[in-house]
Amino acid sequence: NTIASAVEDASNAIRWLEDNADSYCIDPTRLGLWGGSAGAVISMAVAYALDDLLISVNKPDVVIDHWGGLLLSDVMESSDAPLFIVHGDVDTTVPYQRALDLQLEADSASVPYAFYTIVGAGHGFSEIPVTEVSVDGLTLQELAGFLMRIFWVSHPCTRSGLLCLMIASN
Image (cartoon, rainbow, N blue to C red):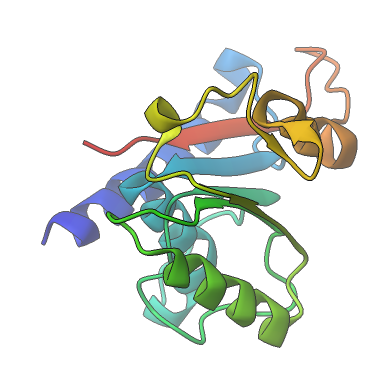
């Protein structure tokens, strides 16, 4: 199964980061998962559904979902990582309704989230000029400040904070 393999790969990547943290000056306790499309689906499966599958991996501090959705429902818990959702309302690849369902699940589980609809946008950054299109008055580039404002904590070795594991699709 391609999805199961991708979830396993992402879990193994997190474990590799943990095992090699000293060599690469990484703080494995400060982790974010960021994915677009299928990468977002995998990020959310790793962050929210592995407990239900009895698979153990360090939990991320934040999950960033661009144009994704949950594979399973009722997997979020109030102690889970905050979620940042961006979705175009005319997406024909991953329907906008999936983002609304994700918002509803986060609400139901009391998981903190930020949800931004890109009006008139389809699927992916290639359809959106990130420095021009705004959501609630902020460009997508400015919205990346979400990570900086909430999770950026200095790490003595890197002078950086949160490590984001980008989970790509394709």
